[in-house]
Image (cartoon, rainbow, N blue to C red; front, side):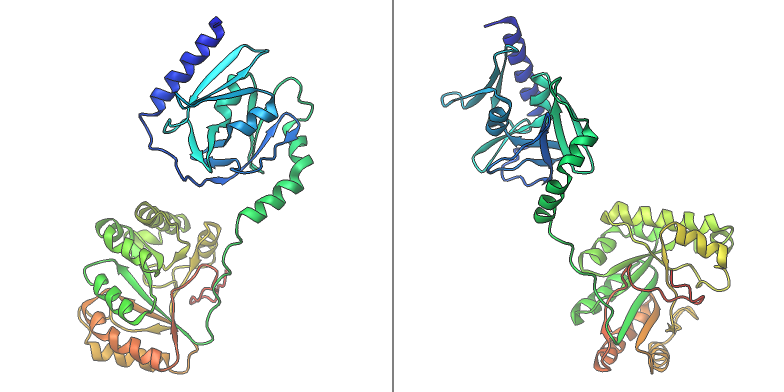
Length: 374
């Protein structure tokens, strides 16, 4: 065995041993769509298509070897695949059971495309528009841009077949009430969630960043049970929130980061403290719109925050009076004890009155005091 072959085998063995310390097997793995190019050809595989996992492109080594003209042998005793290219005098031994370096899919040994290709002297590039992973050597005539343009139609057609269309956006019902809750989450939020869950309806929670951090489990439950999540800022201090247009954006960004840290979701729904009038004049609204946010106020005020403890029967009376005659009611609540007491009666009344109770969605036209529908 030549010095080059011994060196290549040693490199392969070290990589297998090191990588095996960091990951479990990819058996049954399912990755993202990616196509593979070799010089100026877009490769086609009969089965076990190429796929991207954790940013790396994997493909069946047998078909890659056939396309590249490499020799390939499998040793049943050692359960190893040997790939060789005589002109370069390189032999690589690939352990089929290596946790990260290779994995089996549909009885095909899947290997990292970049790692194998570079071992055989190819330069590997990644075309994000495809996406396409392409290995090329001196015989390639097309630039990456020319390669993609040549195969664009084929790639886009296959991608469309493999990636299902996103579900259609939910339409607003003809008669709808949005139950929105501010200033949480807190100890009462779980009781609110219990009530909504028991009746199979949804709410929207405009949350403060500090409360999100203090009650992460409740935020996870809000998300898991299909409710909508919105942002209410950080301080709830008018002097600080409205110090400048950027101050409002900064508060919402901080709240967004808090929600994303807990749920992995970035919401665009916001409700500014105390409502948008008179604070959110044109420059302020322009700032939050430029930051990608949708600003919501309300058209039904439960009055549950007008005192330290507003009786439940007063909350019920206020909501019923203000909802009457509206086909689209955006109801303002707060995560408070008497709100919890009033909520079952109000939910049952709204349902009996023909309202659908769903969460706000980012594509819905926002309702705010300025009539700004952006």
